[in-house]
Amino acid sequence: MGNHRDSTEEVSSVAVTSLEASKEKFPDPGLPPHSPRLTDVDPKQNKKAERHVTLLFVISILGALLFWFAYFGIRVEGNFYDVTNPENNHLLRLQNLFLGLGIALSMFGIGIGIVHWARALMPDHEMVEMRHPVSSEESRAEAQDIMETIIDESGIKRRPLLRNTLIGSIILAPLTFVTLFRDLGPANPSLLKHTLWDQGVRLVRDPSGTPIKAADVTIGSAYHVLPENLQSLTHETGYVEEKAKAVVLLMRINPAELNISEDRKDWNVDGILAFSKVCTHVGCPIALYEQRTHHLLCPCHQSTFDAANECEVIFGPAAHPLPQLPIAVDEEGYLVAQSDFHEPVGPAYWERAKHVNEMAGEAN
Amino acid sequence: MKALSQKRRHPLAAVVLLAIALILTGGLYAVATASNQAQAASSTTYTASDIEEGQKLFVSNCATCHGLNAEGTVDGPSLVGVGAAAVDFQVGTGRMPMQMQGTQAQVKPRQFNDEQTHQLAAYVASLGAGPTVPEDEHLDVTKGDAANGAKVFLANCAMCHNAAGAGGALTRGKWAPTLMGVSEKHIYEAMETGPQNMPVFNDANITPEEKRDVITYLKAQEVNESPGGFKLGSLGPVSEGLLIWTLGLGIVIAFTIWLTSRSA
Image 1 (tube, rainbow over the protein chains, first blue to last red):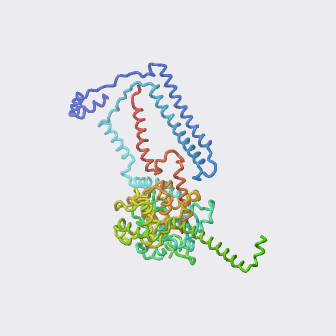
Image 2 (image 1 turned 135 degrees about the horizontal axis):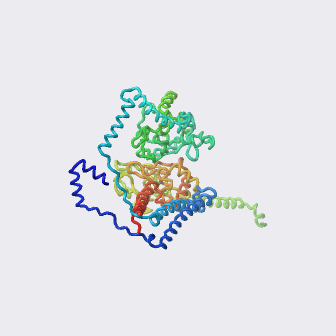
Image 3 (image 1 turned 90 degrees about the vertical axis):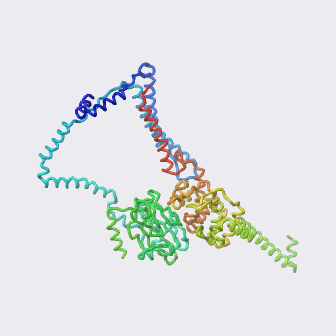
């Protein structure tokens, strides 16, 4: 504290007078008088506080045990998705309650116990810690000297080749980690390029798997669609992965309200359009379709697409339109795909631009 | 029996037999058709006077927006071909007549009683073929399969109406309303007609049996308690976030004050 005052006095006399003036206005109140706690004077209270802290820690232990009891002890038998079975629902509810309560008690007990220990039993004498002296002009000049010596002795100004190679290595070294992020995606990125859709694959309803007649898709309708060949896959042969890429939303819009570019003129059947349901932002499923405004809304980050305008982005963080699936009608009147998507579905990835070009080449 | 066998060669026997057969067939047919008519009359048949009364109600209550002949104006769509189901839903839930123009027609106490709604539906149905008011058979939740209904609901409805049927926000001020407490008939009609911005789910898309399964699932959801603590309206991060930012943060602040207070 003394050092601090000394240095300000040296710097400016104006500061000193203002400091002196404020001293008169606000006298240092000092520390409030120390009053001993009940636990300091009464050994009975001391014992009691100790018991309380122990009890809190025991509550924490019991909470952890309650969690394990709920996790391993309560078993929900049978199909717990069966919403009409109240028995399973009750068990599930009980398990969730005890899981949450167990974790909460085990954390709460430790936290409150430690705080109570510190407040009631640990010494409570006040301590004064002096402020560290603020750096002076001298030490600042000293530090500058050291820096200059380093620059001078390293010769970084006289040896530009050394300096430039150092800068280059510092920039490139962290970039090696960025390259590692590539490995977070699939090992073979062309997996993302193709889906199960192909020429002549029928569009079927999700979840019933029945094919769709073009005449049944009335204006304003929305169908949730899967490729028919998905049904031959099992969980082991990649059902979930293929389904996640191939999901499609089918809707019919009055052709007079459509705005379609020349090269996509024959991709729809009398206003029946099929778009990928995977958001091009981070891949959430999009199916919030408004039949009058033709807006498609992604529930995750509110990206909005205009279905009447080739699903261009009209709001939100998505970067490119939803890919359109070219469709046609087979001789029995059912809707079929003309081909796979003409661009990769879902969010952008490292090789996307390359794949878009390749797929455009394949289509032509 | 002896008397019968003696008289079977009587000249009038053939006439009597023919008469009995005719009465039996005719009687059975009459009973059968009468029961058919009785079923149909309950919901989907309309008399000429229904249509006439409906037109009067329409002209005085609806024509301002929908046009004198329901042909539509800039303020309201044409009602030709929307069917009786659309009228029964919109008027029956109080959405129509609208209180004011806005992003979305809101549910409010309905303005017309059952008979008037029936008459309005009769008039609009007479303008052009459209979805009819559903048969009671397709609304009977005791016959539905809730597990299949859950699958259909999750694939077709849950994205807007929320997995618990609690409703959710759409674009530019529109929203999907909650499905809790909505009558079986109105749920069915909404799927069939696609009110406002809801897509149409016609009988080819979701069959009447699947619609009944969906209704069964929703009715089961109404009575099921939440599987994990408080529901908070089943609205997800909105209500849960609000609770933790007010109550949760309040508790944290209270603990901070207790921690830093002087112990006595």
